[in-house]
Image (cartoon, rainbow, N blue to C red; front, side):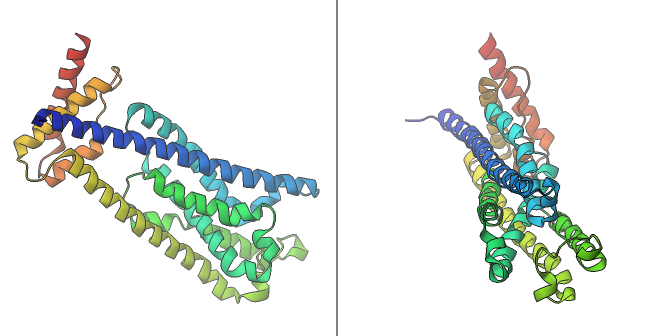
Length: 305
């Protein structure tokens, strides 16, 4: 028969395993995102060079810009995922998570425009060569990767609006180069056939509006998943109906577990988890940090005595 202490120990171990698994999933997702995006962008640049064109011209396409953002975001996340797996606690700065969110909004927009518009007017442009990767494969993989990574942040409407900035800026530059300057005067070619098929005022409003709609949908899905994950984490760590004293005992036990399994150079402090527990039980984080740290050093000293 399991004792209460053994149940507590198992529960803490399950939480750490959950965190370690999350770090591994984030590492795999970031590497996959980087691999597909880099392959598609580099392949496109090679084709431009083979056609005696400047490789930089590929960045006239919003597809390339959005995939470059996700590729860079994946590079930023990878070291955090490696360190998270080593420490059994994955976390990234919020600005990195928003940066990946921004790239995903852009790639999702390119997929929707490619399938819903470009495929009808120019199928080769939509799906030919490396565009299959840039317009379909990469956006799908980025979507999957984004939700696998689970940064743990609840995105705000302000965050959602920020992710639309690249699309708004690109739309402005595109209209200046294609409409105001014109290809005959050194501007861009109408790469997306906007002048041929879409009234300019409609296009100017539609791209930012669709981008913001995509961003808000992703925000809704992400925030719902984060809240559900937090509830699952709480249920694994603290059973329902416990007293304040029992919560502090659980924090002492979690500290002991971490003291036994963490690197000796520093204390692993789950501030996000402690803040969630503090809010639920109307405690201050400081009230939980104290028993956690006592438990950590109690186990640490016992292990090294």
